[in-house]
Image 1 (cartoon, rainbow, N blue to C red):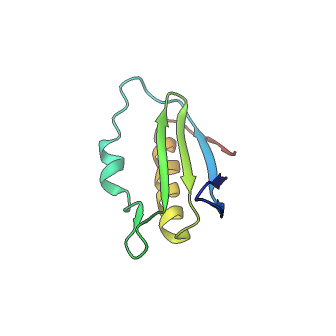
Image 2 (image 1 turned 90 degrees about the horizontal axis):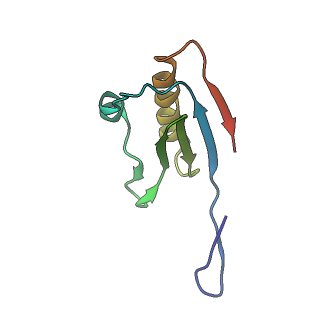
Length: 93
């Protein structure tokens, strides 16, 4: 991914994943949100990860800023998906 910052393009490394599972119609992510680590790296004020809740599961982006925090968050999403079924499908985009 390239971002135009004047004459010098900046390359942003990111890994994107889709975590598919049977999302219940009345799904409430409040408990999940309470467990999530901060998505902001305080020293650099950079985004560590981001996510989106979709009708077929979670979309997750690891911005390659802090692998420990991103992997902790990713694991929480996978664990949350496994609460609603015996398996999930994880696809790297």
